[in-house]
Length: 115
View 1 (cartoon, one colour):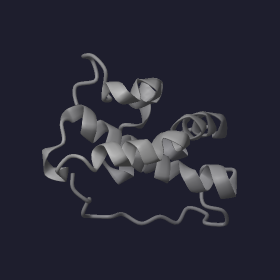
View 2: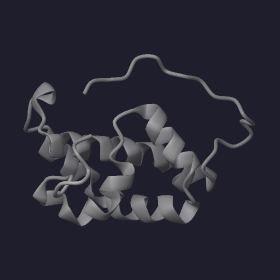
View 3: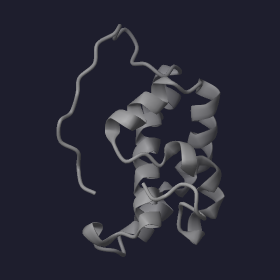
């Protein structure tokens, strides 16, 4: 993720999602999963409600650029979409941050998709 102390984190077309950027523009799946587990359902629902309606716009916007050449703000937008995916099942199905009946089970992924 780009330097969080300077300016907007997302492209101007997505300034309405900026309030969620500092929390949810996370570059790795483990970071997104940890944020999900450390979030309340109210936090995830607020993010989901704001971002879900914009996901098609975000993907159409990002599809205009080569994946390996995304700017920092564009890459942050992609990470925000990844975070939306991470919270979608808890919000839509489970109504809790953890997978139902999973106890403390987890797995680690050793390779991240790029970028």
